[in-house]
Length: 536
Ligand code: ACM
Ligand code: ZN
Image (cartoon, rainbow, N blue to C red; front, side):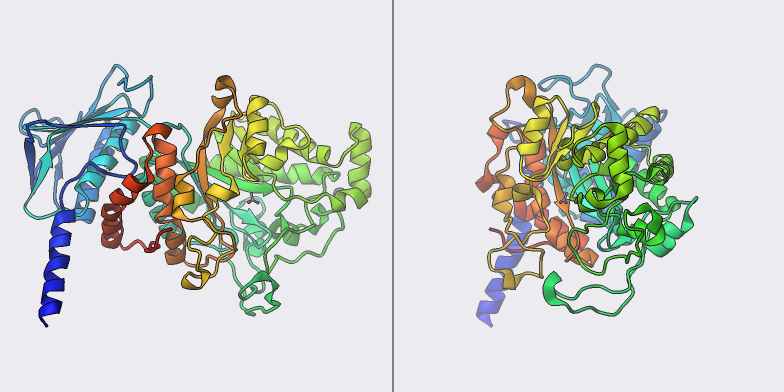
């Protein structure tokens, strides 16, 4: 009994120690200057958050700050515009850019002094990044009053692109969970949500002019049980797709949190969802099943059929209508060329265009899509395979098969997103002992490895290095069926990548990061987020 009582008090003391304000947050801000005299500011329940009432976006920021503290700490603040005196928190746009290092639209300053808290930046986005920092500093600290040590924090991200990819095609995830996923991204300072919407295993984007695409193409007859090679199937039809209305809702939700949504319709491979509905778009004419298992299908869109481009343009027209993102992902990965080799239409197309390699057919499609997207003011992103036949001029490369593709792309002056499997594929196991985790696709990507990533390869010159836009982690979901599992794969590896995305390389320190992590985990517990408790 005595032992249990003492354990109880130890746990309680531990909680009290953690439940204090600390600016040791993740990602760690660039500069944190604590007041030398140890002064504090006391935030009390019901205190006011104020802002310029003419600025609707700041009003939204203020409302989010109020929501965050209520959910995280059970602490009630009150948002009120144009309060001149006595406000506890002021959100402010500074007209001149806040210079931490250079001019960065996301640079913010968070000041706590004896009279209150100010978060200022050149943009509303910058102010929002500061709000997330304040929120994490407070963590789950609640009660009637919160003591904040006086401080000046000056911060800005290292990379402009800080992405997270989510495959909602192998498995469908409800819109409410997509929103939670976006919340978690915002908490970590990420700003690009790469939404993978279509696959061999299901087409999950509503196209109004072709309603069968989502209605029929989203449904597979069954799903493989266990490892792909098991040969066992569950016999249960599986489907689900996102209506355009839902996609718009997600875009707006993300935009409020300063996250851009980049949709991906993967072409010309990973298209069995569409080929099932329109078999005439395949080289053999089908029939094609929506795949019940995983892997790379040899059946892809026929590059020689003029209907293929007509189809794609219609799909992308609607996609662009729904998603305002300047950047649109056209996929381009894992598209075998066997069918093109044997297809009279594809061969005739090669002859007509004077092409000698099938890879160039993919480039032909990419260029057509590039032209079409450019006319709409959009820029395409493709997986690194899109480099093989020569990428269209404006194309951005997402380097996943290691960093090689990214290096080559940067040398050709294409912008690059670095997401190599060995540092960024969070569908891999995170622990060595794979029996202590849910089944995963394979691989081994522990927290420490994610943290160790350096997105700018040393082979690049200073000039070439400027083309590295930023890193991203990818969450593929062949083996991830439920939201809780997705969160478990994401956290805390997202914490690690967020420091890679945000911090200057020379300030990263894995041991210090691990010491900062428990406060984040307490917040996850509070918010009901699953995460992997063991870390390697
Ligand atoms: C990929 O992982 N196939 C891009
Ligand atoms: Zn063909």
